[in-house]
Length: 141
Image 1 (cartoon, rainbow, N blue to C red):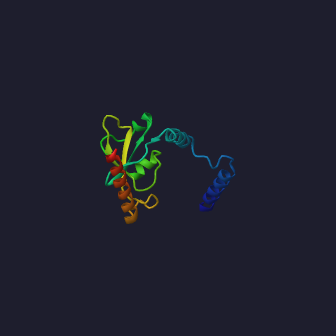
Image 2: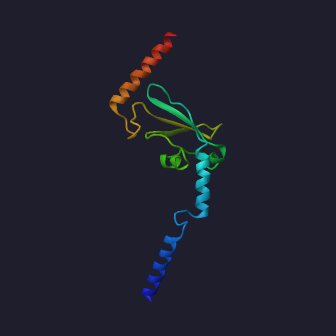
Image 3: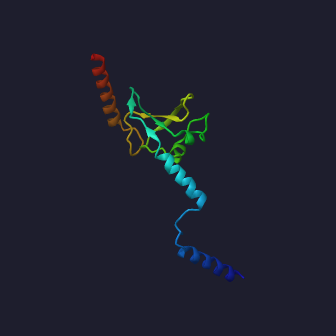
């Protein structure tokens, strides 16, 4: 009895591996993936802006995508990456702009290494120096 089950499973695996569409996901998954790809291509990213402690950016999501997001809490990194937001490491979703919930507000400490997501002391010092220099130039104007 066990051997007949084993043969059946083996036979099914062979049938699946020889099928021309064996690498395609099931239709429901394919539709959801296509929807996410289309939505991800419509996500807009702002330029970065800074203050003396953080660099910031905002991300504008298509409203169809944003309506499925939780309204009362911030998104974790896995969640915002899961909906198609693509940016380097170290960014944190830090606030919800209630009038426009489709706009996600992100920040990360100055001097964050975009590859590791951790603050590098030298990068932090350089970023703060650059910020102070630009602040001084703007105050002279």
